[in-house]
Image (tube, rainbow, N blue to C red; front, top):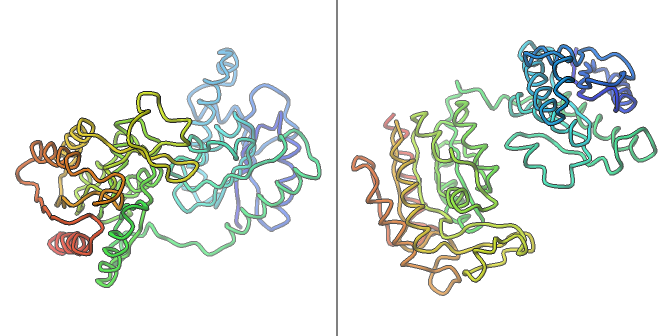
Length: 406
């Protein structure tokens, strides 16, 4: 029998949890209720109590209450719940999960959901779903449902939202599962990174590699995409990487919105899988709306991509730093790696006549990169822009040769 977990604080969200439980049961799916509440009296007894969750985090409810520290309590309960959820899934006892809550409940439930593999249905009904959800979703496939009204009792609106969320989960759980993690498949999976300004390169390279029988998985290099790529490499899902768009490094160094964290561009090297790397969109750092641009960057060469995204051209000093960091990361590679340098520009905006065209800035990055790179790293320098067919063809061919040579 199919089963799903329901994560909620039954002392404050018990009525809503019971409603979701009834909807799921009506669909012939077993609901397993995980009560993350620690203080108040639960509306009904959960299948897994707060005490069990605390013990899975090597604490007790009494200790957590004695701390009188809400933030610390939420962190611990999230970790304990994650251990429980992971165990339930690994034992085949659940096939999906739904959570509901405000800020604290959302933090606990999504922390737990992140312990489950990609592809396992995860639904979160939250009062925070219309704001910045990155701290809660991260690089996982968590579906956020805006609660519209506060989760404080049932009414005509909350009933409909909770019903939709529960039915969405049931539909996903009943649907056919695709085992994309099967690494025994003969078809090689390649992860590629793309930005709007590097799309022509990636699309052309993708087409070439697909004709050779490879499966291409393209990741938007917006921070979340880079994290997902790194995680799937680490988990062994991806067999090779075509890292056309490494702009997340620039964002990490200069506090842009699209940072993928300090470990970007390291997983493939540590795993030892074939990778071909280039400098896509290193001519820019991405920020949010114009009003969010740090004061120190005002007066720089800027481009409003859309009302929510402002791009800043990297300068010579910043590009030197980017080049040094790229070299450090590429030097860590334990497996085959080729670096393709397009001297004609790093993006569609870095071309003659375009706003970010800057041969001197680009050369500063290239010089710093080459001066710090290990001599055994293969480097291909081309006069073209990164989006030229020649660069796309070369990157695809180089990666194919690395894979075949394995």
